[in-house]
Image (cartoon, rainbow, N blue to C red):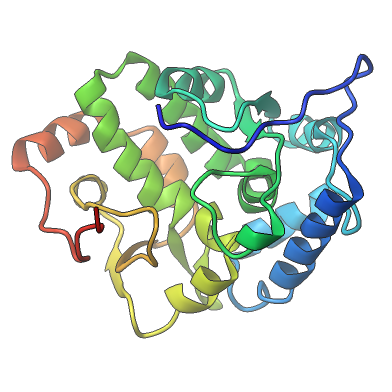
Length: 261
């Protein structure tokens, strides 16, 4: 597992996490900037979740505040974790309907991008859709499958996660919209992904698993669901059979340059 320079903050005896004012200020900058970009870009199910969560603007929310909303809507919770966690822990949490949240926030110098998922990415990017039963069901099934998968199979499952939960798009009656949390927590990617520059492909599970990605660039290709309920349908299909098919067929050629050494 890669090293991290970030340290997740620990709760006190009452379960309260104390963040300094400078970190609350980073949260406020991030959330107010991103909320301005959602109209006409984020899918309605995400916007409904944002409304339910009623996230504060002037401070980082406590995890208990998020849990009250998620538990009431879909039975999910968030779980405090260190900055980076192993695959095994990640799958264990999702399989028990707990979404990992690292209790640190990026520095002002990394306002626009950081490679490690911080509390803004997890709560603002992912938690709104965890109020949606279709998205929640898919995420739960994904965790259960990941727990049983081999090391090699997990690599293909990771691509499915990347192309859906992190960077997925969806067609709606109002037009093409974003549901992926990696996009919805990034102002640059929120603007870019719906432009004419990247490639959009209809969602196909095997194709998504065969598509290489880099975490440090704007994505060259996005997979588009016909509707968000498709995630619920996928959760009840034979995902591991698709993994085996993708492994047999192998990866596509990357649509991006190799990362500089």
